Image (cartoon, rainbow, N blue to C red; front, top):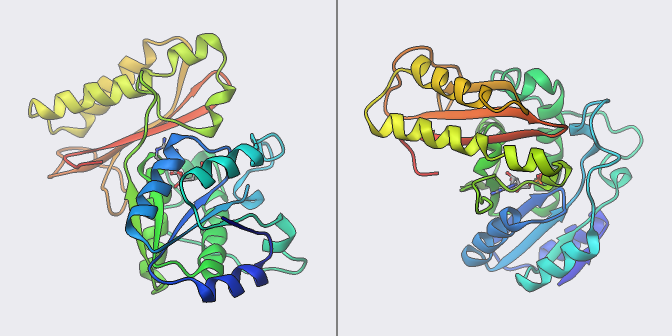
Length: 281
Ligand code: AMP
């Protein structure tokens, strides 16, 4: 496994890699969710590149950039076990040298949902992902369904900018009690950790309403909201039922599928989860 820290070394090394090349961008502090992406990439590609980069531009001024959990040594050991070929670990100054002034904005689907609580977040994500794609030139790039809006924004960016790669969206990996794995779960304290599976429970109850034939978005949303509100430690930021392509909110009858996504604060951390009603992930 090669560890590369500069863009010039990464580009040189990339020239030697046989295609297809799979790429998994991460912010490190790896868990089984990340590793499921790496395994999928491993099984579908000749070479696998994983990046570890806590991207400063996707954090708001009052967010946790400085304290975001980091454990590089452990991450590298895990990636080695998964037969990763290359780990790209640049410093922020490498990706954002003085004077860098170009940004990628995906309009229409970034001002809603996560974009309301986190203005500028997707501009940071789209920009860093573009830079990482340009540096690593992957054939396939792997993203998690857990961050459903992010995956959709990246897909739209690739379509709009005619980028030469394909995005693969992988299903959410969960703890045994249903909590979606996340690096930020370590912020959950005892009681909060116990309360956190309420997100998944509410998704399951929406799924069973759907399975029984319920198609009215407002009805399903209402059930979820009251279930989450029954948990005193949980505070809803949003519960959304939206078109899977445009992410625009559906108010009445759902067609054949919809993205059900939510952000809920449980204590300090703000947790995200989602499923596709009528879909597979
Ligand atoms: P992050 O390090 O949080 O930026 O995540 C890197 C990638 O891993 C993103 O594409 C996430 O959507 C994905 N990911 C994070 N958590 C999970 C999970 N529990 N299951 C599947 N993918 C995940």
